[in-house]
Length: 190
Image (spheres, helix red, strand yellow):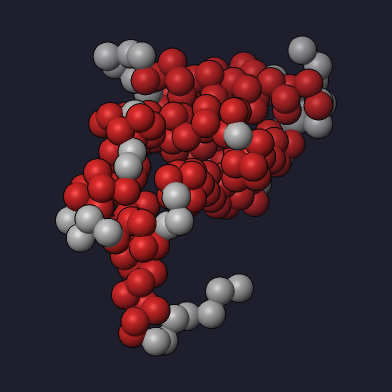
């Protein structure tokens, strides 16, 4: 567990790093990965031009921090849902997906970073944690390993397709698709 930062300078430095990560996500959402530079991120954060270079050695470190934050936040949400049992978990997951697609800029930035991880193996740990959390959630609803694998891929596909639509899917639509993918009962095969 992380110890709280009590040194004011360290706390301010950590706050600046978080501001830079948020700014990176906004830049990626607006301009793509090619728009990320220390200067553009610092400007977006409203910080001195040297701030990003001071806190992050290179652009790769900044992008890694942004990807890690996105995936870890998503993973934590999934872990909370995976810990729930009963009929409420699936509608809550569908509602979460519907909420996520209402923030297309943030979702677009996440997928830009997600695709970067496909090219950079060192970035895959956060995406692996996200996929494992999805699989854990699926296992709460089926013991069929094929359905578990299918759900992990399905969620990514649904979110990517939502970025291409003028009207994103509703929670009810997400729930219907998820229920169909998982089957009507535990252990049922495809």
